Length: 227
Image (tube, rainbow, N blue to C red; front, side, top):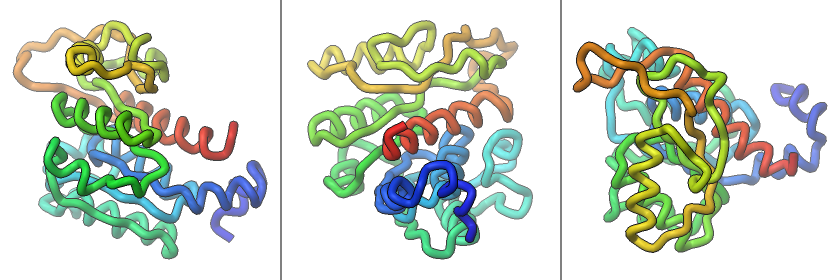
């Protein structure tokens, strides 16, 4: 059985909890593609993925689903095919849209046990957080991992405890202005962004975003099974 080794670690009851958990993942980039992979390989059977983009050649250096053979394909479609190859019993709902204030309600409703936000758009991240807080949906959000070299400086902490990360700072500011709590968990890096020759271009590698994605999935899985 494909999940025997996991069941041996956590037991049948907790594995059943995992199978029954419904998770929505926003973004299938350098962070989100690894998050989604771990979720799919952990027996979770109901996953929703939201990403409007297609795979580009420039994604190959850091995104799990980006291969020469998948360039030009929709990220959500590539992930769904991959997830079904991992577990034929998985249910993958796909949204080929750019998340924004107007469609988050339609996407999430109140149908998910956990939301994992792995996108990089500040306004959309704020709206996802606000919706989850308003509707008591458990969630965790990814902060910025571009221009970073040190995965050992990635942390899981509450938003009000973050430091250094420019993206976290922008989101904290907006949520405070809108009167929202910062009492929710995020993955962020305490590493200062690298200095770049061309500051208009975000740079990234294979290891920092992927580790952040694994941290996010690990946080959710361990919460579900009570570890």
